[in-house]
Image (cartoon, rainbow over the protein chains, first blue to last red):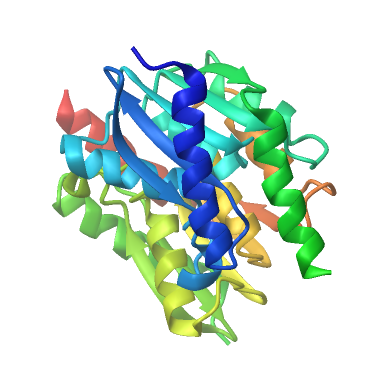
Length: 149
Length: 149
């Protein structure tokens, strides 16, 4: 059995691909039964689409693989706290658990995504675990923005 | 100049396409300078993807047309109150205004999407107008679910 650090390192490898392509370095992998079924990195600028976040691409790849929009009994590892778009896609895809690395620096984002992921009014709730390899996940993003200045 | 009812009727025409394909009948159009630049309908079940909501498909078509993820100075017309995924995509795409038909029946959904669309902590805020052709927009959805029973 692989552990959380193992899969978060794979998500970080994805974030590095984004970095190389001059995209904000965020990566994600989706795991089912301890096996990676999808991996992706942020491609928003290259694809000129707000929907090309790592999580959404990973969800689309996993759904294509499982031939189902339902991704029950899967875990998504993301290097950064998700935005509400990705959090809601994760919730609607019925992913069991999100494990993310570093926190967003946007005030209120965490409060909003928790309302989306763990709201009893929606038909599925997602377990949240945060802070796995937080330093590594945030430092690649900080370096990216420092190089931009 | 066309008015809101004109564009909502076009969104409703899209919803009817979804209905014909046995999808929850929700439609959307995106308008810039009083011209429709994208239209789409829900294709979640056919495409087996949670990301195939009408709004996300419309955003992707509009971005492809404008060759930019930024959709400034556009209005999106949707027949149904959006889910948080679509609301956040609309906010991140910097769409100026959302005009939607009928309300969601999910408790809290409106509160959550208002926090996403009109939050000063995010870098763009979206004007919200609701209740345009609300009866027509909700009756097509009600009929769809009644036929399912």
